[in-house]
Image (tube, rainbow over the protein chains, first blue to last red):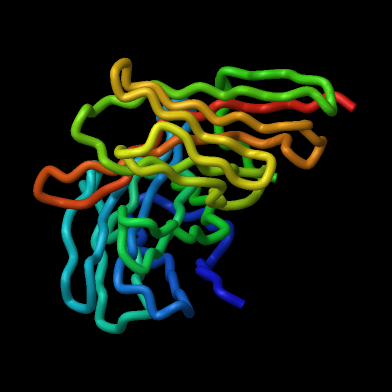
Length: 114
Length: 113
């Protein structure tokens, strides 16, 4: 089954404690991205990756890092989480963004930073 | 399930009626548009897409209309069912040095049985 898998689904952490949210896709997609979803703001792109070792900033990259060492995995790293990073996070992948393809989304990770 | 928005515009329809969800997009250079459905506790799910060289595209029970003159997109759902209850997002794709989807803030569809 084609899917994007995020872990964990729920996470409560304290300010400043480094954390990683994992994302894995089994469709051999080149394009992967991370979004955060906040009430009234919709989905905003954090980082994206066009392929292995190719990553770039999205609309709201501050406070986040990513890596793409393998095609299937695209972890999101918060080196020093702060309360304003409390949000619902989604990982997505596409064969080729924006040209007759769809973005497959993970189930989401609800992060709370206290 | 997870809440995706506390103050979203809401469209309430009766089961069996047709639904029309509207979206205004921001960039006249956008060349590709997608409608997504997001159910409580789940990630967005692709419904239908349309390229900018088209003004209408039909799927199963859904139709997307694109009016580039006024930068407006609509999603029509025929014979709405309780399972259609969800938040619906439009997304546009435009390139300014990077490829990205820009999402609207969403509309909540509530189907009354």
